[in-house]
Figure 1 (cartoon, helix red, strand yellow):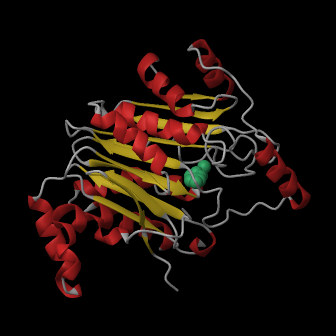
Figure 2 (cartoon, rainbow, N blue to C red):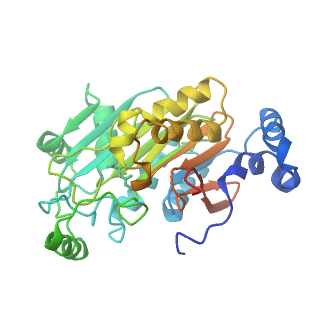
Amino acid sequence: MNRRKFIKNASLTGAGLAVGSTLINCSEDNTKDKQTALNTNVKAKLPLVIATWHVENATAKAMEVLEAGGNALDAVEQGCMIEEANEKGQSVGKGGLPDRDGHVTLDACIMDKNGNCGAVVYLKDITHAVSVAKKVMEETPHVMLAGSGAKEFAISKGFEPEDLLTEASKKAWEEWKIKSEYKPIINIENHDTIGMLAIDKNGDISGACTTSGLAYKMAGRVGDSPIIGSGLFVDNEIGGCVATGLGEEVVKTVGSFLVVELMRQGKSPQEACEEAIGRIVNKPNSNYKDFQVGYIAVNKKGETGSYSIHQWFSMTKFQDGINEQIQSDYYNKS
Ligand code: SD4
């Protein structure tokens, strides 16, 4: 299905979760208050998975793990692995678009219900960066490994090195080299980082984020996706958030941590995502018209939200037997 054929607007997701379609008939002036009040009293149907963009195969895999009684950590890892192995996705794992020198370099991180986390940056030749990040978390005293150290660690744990540059991505890079123009473009296929959050049957939350980063980036560039607090943050008492889009802008505002902290202060996931986007677009001299950032978030009650700067960002949500793509509300309506 084309990304632009969406199912419904994300601003209704919290309401839909709580009371099905009844809220859709609310009058505009008091809808938000009613949503908040109703959501407070209704328990979400668990388990639940959300992910950035249109990744129904990935959310289906995560849900399969959760339905079988697996935990949220294994669910987000296995869900993200689907996109890492998908060679057609040119911004994650194998088949990712390379940096300007033709090297595919991956960034990923993962975070569990206890606040443990692991990350890899500038990882070459290993498809499942998210799994290497999980191993860093579980089998080293560290949080983050980079470059050749990350690759050597992965190989020592049995990961097979392979060439991640597919013919299609090589061709795209060769075409790009003719002009060698680097512009982060709004919502095209180089913005398909997968960030995923899951709540398992026990009500515990985990998250993961994996990407080949911005296409044709400078060699050595690392984005927000593997940075705990920027591309991903989970606090099992409160909720979780993941980011996609121009990583530099997410890092500058520590976006995912910000969203979780705003939820801690009482904001809904939707309100928190909106405020975090506000921090980016309301900066003096912000050139937000030229780039995209999107957030998705879930709180402990299972309410979800998503928001972006520009149109056409979406979230995939799998809950209560329904695996659907939900259009995100967005800031730039001009
Ligand atoms: C980055 N945030 O490396 C990532 C890119 C992205 O979809 O989200 N692509 O900046």
